Image 1 (spheres, rainbow, N blue to C red):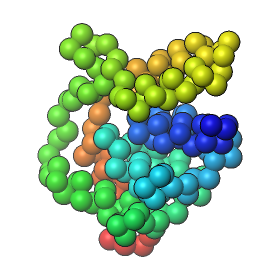
Image 2 (cartoon, rainbow, N blue to C red):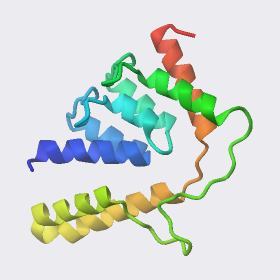
Image 3 (tube, one colour):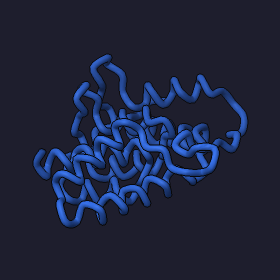
Length: 168
């Protein structure tokens, strides 16, 4: 796997965990904000479809030039997904939720995809692999311990995308 592919994987991984700073950093390194995953989903759609959507990630993608109207393989845009998710959640306050990435003792539990990503880092970076893995785990834990407010975030995302696309 070359550096470009690694950066693309890092982008989608950091979109998934809602790490605004890392997403910005990766986009600034030259990764196209309109990149699509293996299933043809644009990065902005992946951001809205993330387990815990983060409006800041959507903002960073848009600032970098992501197409707010880009559609996935099913013909749905990020705005379509955000509206649907918000409708399913309904009105009301967000309950305080605990990350599914933490076990009962508060230890970080990595998904199979994340473990595979860590193994790839170890293979590619030799002497510096442990340092890179430690950084990845620290950032992942930071994302796992923050409080999630999906309704609030989806409302912000819907508002921004409606403003950009001129739909209400």
